[in-house]
Length: 339
Image (tube, rainbow, N blue to C red):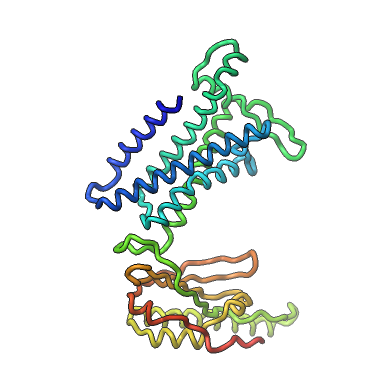
């Protein structure tokens, strides 16, 4: 019974790929695109099968129907993440970066997967539905009835809102949007990863360093404005010094001066334990291509502590293979002095 809709989905997939993918791409890229899509289709099928199986094991349990604050489809988002995991996994494995056109194909396939799941549910319950209603109805009638008959339960008391009527279509739309956006979660994260276009590979993290952008916190009475002002001045000076050190590193990268780069980090860098004691630090991550050995230096400002951390990107700098190889493992020579 699944052969007809499956055929149309595969046909639509081939048409979309033919229109959206650049015809000048080489065979390996086209093969990687297909591998990414096939892996995504498998993960989508597995996620939706799990939802169907879970609903059969537990009466009145629909994971896709979980909402937070009535409008955020948490359940659909989580299922979507599982459905889209195949796209992300194969993208990472093959080194094929998910382009904008491929991302559009993924969105359409996720929406088709959601629609197919609704059809499969109707097909599996068709005889029971016809028997209960005393007449034969098609899929669209079934979908309209079940959508209008949707209900919401409120709080621990499980108070029901009753049938939502036309409002049910709004929640269907939210469910579809949550599922599709959840499916893009991993691919979007991968798109932000440093990537070597010449080798068609995602870069790996080679090293990580931290520079101070604050001074250690100290106990100061709120009734002592002089001490508070002095502490704020120290914080401002530490921040300015950190930005100055970062500028030195950027100049060293652009000038291919590995000696200056190493000296700045060895004399001013922090260990991770020291960094965690500061309310602000400049984080530097060196990513390298496993094949050509070129890399990217990623810089960001980290502010806050514990569960209140804000990260602000400060840019990226390309580095050549020789620069990456010359850095090696840099360890800070000095330790932060407690105050």
